[in-house]
Image (tube, rainbow, N blue to C red; front, side):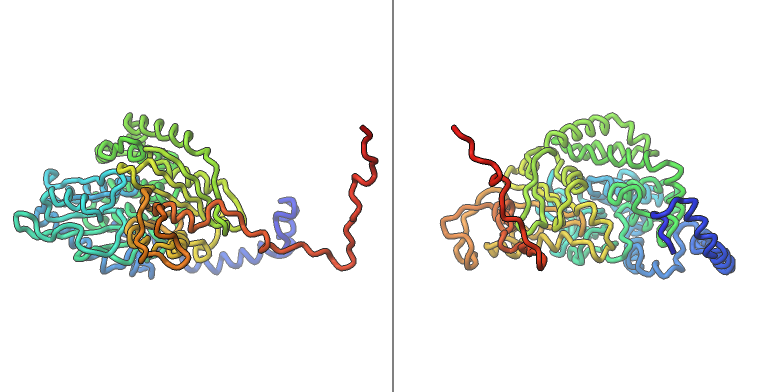
Length: 496
């Protein structure tokens, strides 16, 4: 069969007709008509609240079924026992949308609004830090629901007993790369159930059977998280296991409206003032994407963030010796490093380049840390998932080569977290005095002063040129003679 890109469309169509292609396809369609298509089967599902669970996907999608049922039992327990419930959503579009869906579900099931509390993490903080643990315990809640905050193993997020002696239970809803969870937590994670959903869509599918109002009232918030984390075109809503009715919602509200709303939602958290509570209040009240896009708080924040991105984005990248990393260093109180990483990842192309890293030493309130974001270079996203580089593994590979053996212990909790294609972390910027016992052979000497970030950059060999001796030399073909006479030989030297 001739390729269509080598023929004029009309000639190619004539070629297909003469080859009998259309007769073959007609026969194929008739034979296929006896069996209804997958999409028709899914539309004929008798359960309007959930996708067609007869599909083989649904034993593990969007998360293992037993984990989903445990999480639903937890939510029913919150409302049935009238527990004071603390919501801890992440600050981005996916986390805020997850919080809005959960807040709607709890109130729809009868939990009074004054029993629902919301905690937003401090700037550049993690839910696993002691400072956040103390703040969450201070609310006195007996049930805590953490959404889109990532996960790791370790002790309980909060004390299992309140100061008044009541038992405390925690639910974690997440999709970030992790197989470990805090001790005692009920956890439902989508990270091992491909195609991996966002936390907002996971929360939506989790709450869908719990109350009839969830289907319509929470449809657009679930899409905001999808558009925020995966983009507007990553999901084919006509293909299983994705819920087809959400595709109808996308058509109704339009991709542009959802994309604009996501851009607005992400802006307040990126400002130097870190306006996350303003964002939460606005999203909680919004009934359409347009209400989010037209909110003055969001409009002002986005304009300021865009101006800061433009100021910082023109720094020149430096490359690692192995060519896998392009590093850009900026200084800003705004959270612009993820945006700049995404922008440069769409432009840079090199033979061995895998990721763009943007390091920002001005964002962390302590002034002692560097926040960094990494994004896979855009053309590698077109590869099959199994062939795409795992950025987390690449960073860990470098980290294991750092001469100081205590590096990973100090940074492990906040290093290379997130997703395989979009990760980041926090590394100490202040200089450290090393214990000689922690130094491996060939590492730094006793008198050296280096920060963790400096060590990591040195280990990646940023700015170090590849060894030219390792490059293959061009060998002339057999029988080929290169001209040895130079052009200058044909001209006499000038007379002074």
